[in-house]
Image 1: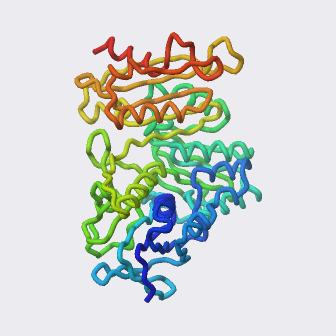
Image 2 (image 1 turned 180 degrees about the vertical axis):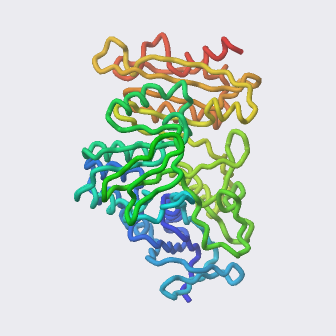
Image 3 (image 1 turned 90 degrees about the vertical axis):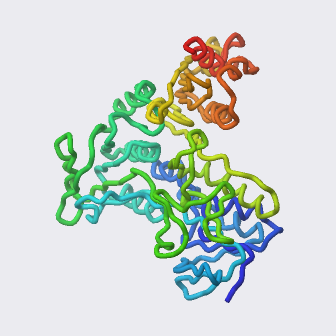
Length: 442
């Protein structure tokens, strides 16, 4: 039996982060079933032709250059009592500390027809190669189900390749988990005007066909009739990859492996990080989906630091995220207004519309912010930004305010910088203006 001081099951962002932070300090073995760890968010851009497939594959040296052992194999079972795992190839690995980083798998809904040829999800290297092969062959039409960030990015990429593209979602507007209805108008209008066929407020109830998919049955519209060789790609969410732990003593909740603030599971010497875990909102304290690399990486860093003697505690999910809808850059963080109201908050909203540079400068783009706060405590709960230029920096600023308890009053007094090519006029600032609008309502 091979022995590891730290054994990691999985090779995604969380696992790689642990490896980097333990480099030279602990002996680490990583068991990863995939040929490559993927840069998932880059996959649509490979479909579009902006990137080569090789650019979406993380290099193995991200693991091995830190001194860790990388094993390409699949763990078949875990013996938590004797602290060892068995792999598909019949090998045994003992461990002193086990880290579960098995990630999450895309969901196929339990409806008739999902086993037909041409029905798939979109996350793995095989998925990417499958879609690329179809694009390069005779693919004429595709239905993307799910108008979240990945679904929209994939739909745009396929449409860019001159393929007739349908985008279906059960909610009445795109990006339902990112934007409130009052913020989504411009990107949704541009997406529709681009030629992508939107089927919103529609649930897919069945897929029909003899061998391949030929008809997508919707609950509010006539079926989408597809030519032979079409694809239906589901991008409706992710489910924690925890099948390995069925019928074991490892505690698994509704959305993943249950961990505490230091990523410890209910079992001694066993930790879990990344998309496979269940954790809470950093705002409400309630269990919240948070299957993002930007959550997985801090978990991995925290765990590694703690294994080296520090005492860090994970703050929870804030779910800052960004995407791009044609020439609209979109981002959000924390709770939407709809979510905040559902959680029982008395919400107050402040909006600000400015430009990304002095308005007199060439290249200035519009930028719109919605800031959401608790009327009683003036605590910031969330924010949404839409602009003609990247917004991730603004989203990160709002996340920082939420995470570290900066109040609306404090944000209104935020000391900001200004320069003609990089900001709005010195007389005003996007965040402070939105905060001032909230204070007028409180």
